[in-house]
Image 1: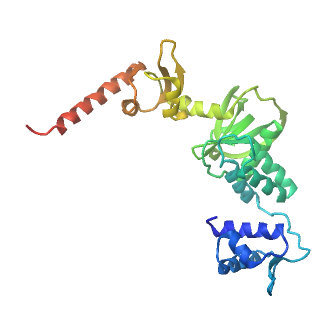
Image 2: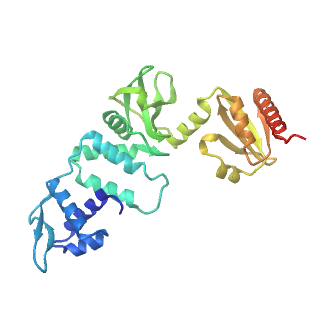
Image 3: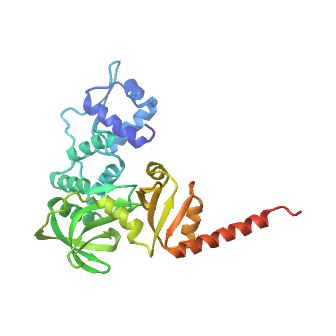
Length: 314
């Protein structure tokens, strides 16, 4: 334990689990001195948690007899901030419940019923690839509830109102995305939550496509769909090695029947893409577009000139 807030919470848990606890035992379990224990006891009292001091040889601290702590009263934005921090702090699935899961269980046990149901829906509907920026609470809760109940939503987007069948919320690169079927375009689209000013559930129900993964859709769209140029580059390596060295947003990797891996990616700046390719640890061949070959040649020329300029004078 390194932060005072963590020790205060640990102290409260110890007092809730037991009756009277000697001060020296509290200091030992919290790994602090007696003065720090007194500070933490004062902090609990400042939060209106009645902690009694018992003097004498067998004294210590305890919660006041008969005290039952009230439900944790969090505002929507506070509950969303806590749930998001916990739900998105773990990116890989594990077989057994870990500390994050246990913390979420404890949080849900003390939330009021109505808010607990909404926060549970938010956690179930959201996947994350990295730490998020907390969205507008009411918007996130409304969209999460629609994902959970499979209700169509009307969103007020910067490009106009849309009716969407929401398949999931995804947090990537600190941004939140809504993924779903856009009725107007009759296609699956994603929308950044910071571009949505409001949302409301509609009576219509829907069934998500079987096997659809919102995370995969967002990563693919950000890799290819958002760029001007589609690039194809053959890499002289195997699929697993390429996956180990390249981030998932770098592009799609496909094994070639005659050996090597085909990298299909997107690029807005072909000269920048040429620079990146020259930094790869494997030989490669540009398949498409021809403009990338031109950008690569120009980059090699610039490098050759830099080498010539860097040679010591005869």
